[in-house]
Amino acid sequence: MKPSLFKNTNINPIDHNKKQTIIKEINTNIEDILNQIFNNKYPFNTKVFIKTNTKEIETYLIKRTEDTITTLDEEKIPINEIIDLNIIRKDFF
Image (cartoon, rainbow, N blue to C red; front, side, top):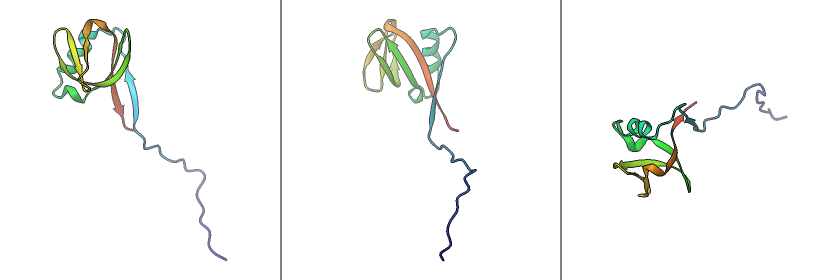
């Protein structure tokens, strides 16, 4: 008779997948959020969710001018067209 291996059924597997949470502020002002992003030492490391009149984008921001922001895909988005802007931070559990 061969020995058999038994697994303890009471042990739950640990989920090592990276989870994302969207941080929403109560009074979201687009200019305040953009200032918060671009006042960081490395603003291009901040992942954001942008909602405009025509589309929704989850990307990184590269550059900001007075009227537009440029994404990692080199897409220019006018600031006055942005409806909602949220910072997405990765949480490791």
